[in-house]
Image (cartoon, rainbow, N blue to C red; front, side, top):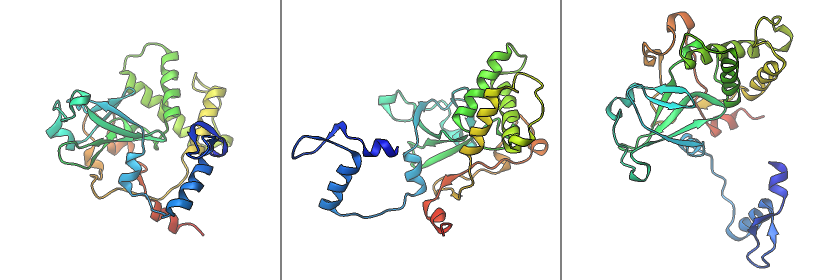
Length: 244
């Protein structure tokens, strides 16, 4: 990102000379002409910047990359048209690639967002990133056919990987199966690096989940697995208070 900001781009040209300029140079020109007003991002601003996909809200919830997300707030909208005809009635879903334990569905009928939790979240020990999920999926695929659903098998592989990531590099057990590979250890290290502590808060227009929001099909019993709390929504103001 540092090099990208400083490098001239053909798609970004000076209005005077037509010469290609860097994002930093164009930003400096705009600030000199219009001034600078720093604004903190709100929780809703943060969600708006996340990647998005369009999905149907089915009886089971919404599905992203073989992960199922559900919440009771979906009940009035299951199999319903979102009102967005350009998307054939699908609903806008946004997700954080570094915390796939939850997804945010835009409520096209009433406004705001519905936060839905991954139904298998009670099986894992911490939020997880997209690259971690994909590695767990590949591990299950390499292991061959299984008697349980693919999503459940992937959740088990993911839980094993997250447990070893939280244990640290010096306390990893000896290899016992296909998960204990060099690539697997690298993914665990990336997972540790990608999940630092950060201050979070949920926006006022989001429903905050509690333990009762996990239904019977969530892939595990909460009393057995314990409560897993997602990262939540990044709050820049709260984070700034932690700075020295």
